[in-house]
Image (cartoon, rainbow, N blue to C red):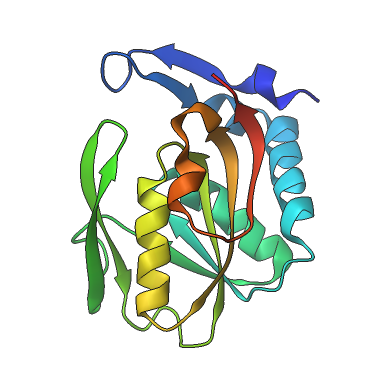
Length: 172
């Protein structure tokens, strides 16, 4: 199955000049969603990690089935004010603005090996700040996994020397 054909592109969303890659078209087709998750599982099944960190909101969509299938812990990284217990908060830049993320202070432990998962790698701002949070909490980044990568935005450059894998890579 060609998953590229299942992605809907929406020009000038959320701002002028951005071509948004919409994964809801994969999600509405059970066979396409299963194929996407199966491919993601195959990319990391031999990687040594015990925790999946998934970024709000579409990272949850791919992170939850991965955690379930691989029998790993799932930790949500959320926008401010969404987590009920004490959090670590960091601000970061997006390709079209800025935002903040929070993680529960007790969500990961020193020594944990963490796979950072999201639906999209663009400029690397979201995943880079999550990496910094993981390290600050005393855990180790085992790698990154994305459904989609916009290679032309050079997001990998912000992620450090960790394994990075993407299922669908857009060159331009």
